[in-house]
Length: 138
Length: 182
Image (cartoon, rainbow over all chains, first blue to last red):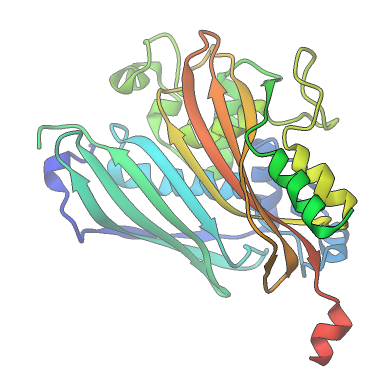
């Protein structure tokens, strides 16, 4: 079942989603996103650049934000914009909890603007503004 | 070269377009499945052509997750784009900053906008330009410049399917002993 535009109101909250940040997720997703930078798989390389451990790449964060939104909308939700700001890195052994809220709606194009936060034990890993288009007459 | 000349050289690179940068692979089901598998994304528009057709697919194939935009024209394992791509660096100012000692880099923002779906069978190419370079900034990480790269993505019909603003900080890290002492 997909969400309809008429079912959404400003202030609605998305159900939270927990993502376990594992070495497997960081390395596996880096390769699936075609990012071969060593800081996403090689602990020594990450430490040489002043980081305590390997960390999640930006493409994976993007992919997870997109997934979080369409998990909520269902398959009829069409992503129009995903803007992310990165903060605290995602290191192995941590977990990140996504939360989200409807900030605005545009009836003429059935667009919903969301603010998404992905928080880990260090703070906000990601703050995102997402625009998604939903089906159904407003 | 004094600071003023250096900053002028940076500003001269704003607006210069480079590309195309071609993708190694035509948009395909296997790479889409690998992406979704790693992300835990079970949205069926990425796996079922019939469901994909309800939001813009042509019925013959699946759609790619919009957030894969950047992935289609990434360099390969060897660090290069395929033959036929612009061989120059997509962001010329980074060479200028590297040479001046601003060698560390951290991505701070990524804003993607999608104009039409990318579907199985599409060939994606990208064009890159620098939209803006900040004045010199002192940040928690070090002293440096914010560089905003604008990437435009086009398909085999030369239709603009998406664009991405990617902001990075190119910086000289603070001296660690100095900052620990201070």
